[in-house]
Length: 123
Image (cartoon, rainbow, N blue to C red):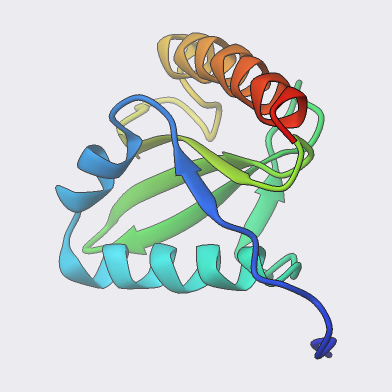
């Protein structure tokens, strides 16, 4: 249940995450956008899961026409929701996120941490 006093947290897009999301099919964009909006209100929607190997980092998984799309975001960095990466998962083997995607997420998480630190210093 949503608390009336709770404020919606803004989303900060890291790197080309927003551009990549805009290239997804409209249905996927709508689903991910809707889920991100619920995250902004403090929910942890059912279609999200923790990204293994990270603290406070989650992924949204959207399936469309037998393809899988993902949006990765961080919630524990100050007042913002940091959307770190959006990508189409094309792994041929199992459900594991490809190393190049994990490496990019790790670099962007570090950028998000720097941004959050600057934001807190400016308050």
